Image 1 (cartoon, helix red, strand yellow):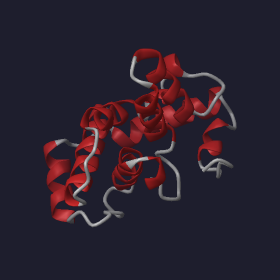
Image 2 (tube, rainbow, N blue to C red):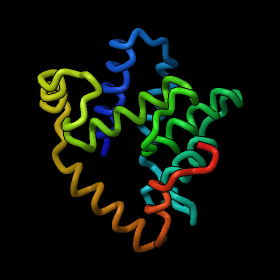
Image 3 (tube, rainbow, N blue to C red):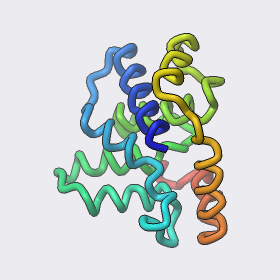
Image 4 (tube, helix red, strand yellow):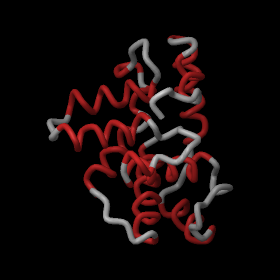
Amino acid sequence: MENHCARAFVIAEELGRRGGLHVDRELLLCAAWLHDAGLYPGAATSDTYVADGRHLAERILDWPPERMTRLGDAIEYHHEVRSQWDRGPEVELMRRADLVEVSQTLVTFGLPRGWLRGLRRSIPPAGMVPEITRLLAGALRDRPGTVPRIFTARSEA
């Protein structure tokens, strides 16, 4: 999972660079490292794992409210189907980076597949799929119904 988080950060940063976007790099880095943290039992509540990741970030970081909201949104909304540009570039870049990652480069958002293959060689995904599968299975077992809610449209979205 550490490599997944590292690749997600590099992908998000590259998407931002290629898009000429000014992003809060520290916020993007924290979002990348914490976006799946809610899958782990120590962070779990009865909420969805993406909300649990947001709550974990709120407990461990003491940032100004606006910045904290953007970080929380980048974590909580990283599985949204619709664009999240209105929440800030870091939120949308995290959403896109995770989609590139979990699609195993079927979705690229314009990044060259050769570049993505090089990233996967330098930060290998070995063990990522089994680990995510194990964590999701545990979340489904321990918190039935919370994982499917991640992919349900929110009224405020």
